[in-house]
Length: 61
Image (cartoon, rainbow, N blue to C red; front, side, top):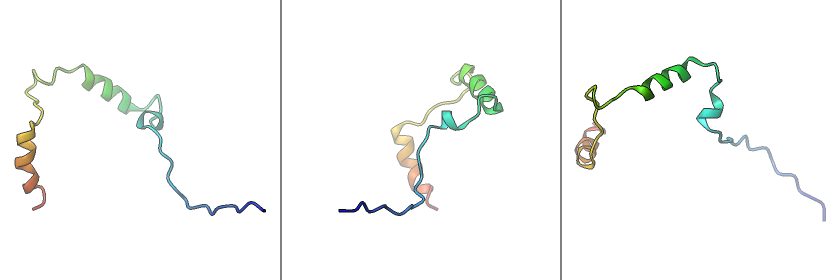
């Protein structure tokens, strides 16, 4: 039985963001800088589950 070759469907291939960004890209410096910051000391807080529920309905309007 002959082999049937499939069609090229131009499907996406997945790769990591880390592999996509060049090693000398400026965004790597920014990422390292942000990682060193103490975000809690700067007043940044994460959302709790109750905050997410309250804000979810407003996101659609």
